[in-house]
Image 1 (spheres, helix red, strand yellow):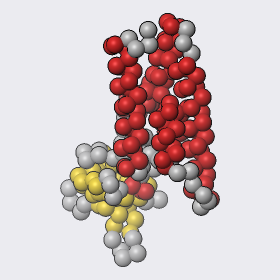
Image 2 (tube, rainbow, N blue to C red; image 1 turned 180 degrees about the vertical axis):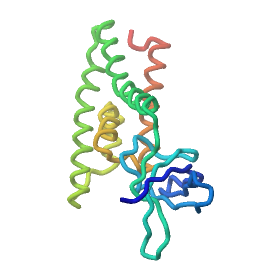
Image 3 (cartoon, rainbow, N blue to C red; image 1 turned 30 degrees about the vertical axis):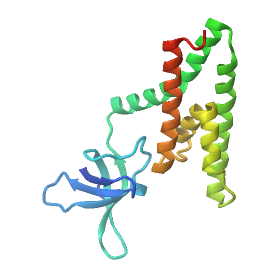
Image 4 (cartoon, one colour; image 1 turned 180 degrees about the horizontal axis):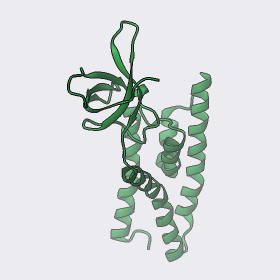
Length: 194
């Protein structure tokens, strides 16, 4: 079994999905790492991350990292999961508050219907991608996210790891989430629901 090593990620080109690790043992050379070598990461790597990895050689005999993992202590893992879950639950709590306070169920219905539909669209698209069949258009996914399905989309990104690596997709997705959050803040400040 190959030796597991550790090192610091000293460069990372996120748009291309690769970088270099400086091994903890100073007499070793920097090691190339590709995003596909990182197993079960809860987030994208960033410069300064500690990486656990093994070494393999490519066809030309160059060393590269394989079977890699971001080193996160238990507290970091718990914080990441709690923050994602809180973000997913937040619009349902706010919509429930509006329903309780104003007897207006529309927002709660919108989030409760659109989120499962968007989640299913993600699942359908992932299955289609695996089978190399006709895909759900990204604009369709973004439209359902915008119409209130973004919590379901975020849950799908976390659970089935779909659409969570493509930077251009993530920029639009997080813009949609930010728009929803800004609308909530605006409505609570200016009382647009009551």
